[in-house]
Length: 357
Image (tube, rainbow, N blue to C red; front, side, top):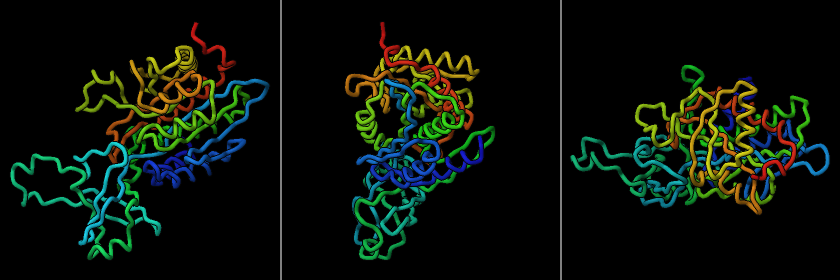
């Protein structure tokens, strides 16, 4: 992967973006894609749209989307001793949070803190076998009392887990937030590759970085309505099943480093799926498959049923340890997802070709 792209990915992952608080990451996305797009805009929800204008009359509108929001926490209550109680933003695992370092994002900048935990020496046998509920956990920022803590932190401030971009062996990388900044990164790289290739595609292309996916596909709903695409490709992450404690019967045979995943099922337009398959074969890009017999729980789900319907596909990046601060992916899978989408864009000719017959 080129150095400039890696730097963008690292900056995007480092930026805090819990659902509803995405703008630090969105600013980085806007700055990067403005080099490649004809226009970049942001709506009242905070979704970012980067458009490469199509050539010709009545060209189909194609929308590529990834969500920039991540899971996190939000401060709910500050007690008299200066400890901060919180609620989850998105699907936070109570098993993982005790003992974690965090950043509380205040109007004056980020404040470091730690999620406290009773020492094991002071716990009875029953307590050792019980997961502490999230509403009983607390953050220690070192404040001497509640009065001092309230000068530093406000109710409603967002919290992210401390995490660093780490390189593992065999092109694997780890960080918090790959769900779904990996998808946002692919959207940006698709725009870059389309622009740098000099080839004209027969489509009006919108690359969208959406918000609030983790709390109900909210940005995907509003951005799909705004763009009103004929064709939509959602770029997401999906459970890798090549780790020891995951059952393959749940999600099929999915491994890091073996290519992006193409979903099949009711959420997926069959003609668009076939275009992706054909492009993968022609470009010699390995792909994997998963089954989605119902809605997919991604922005593809709301995109498909926006207005009078959208021909939708879902391209996914294999991911280990979802919704932890050490989400792990393969860089080659991310790169190949972008290349696959670009190759497919070159095959889109008209909106009518996606109507099932």
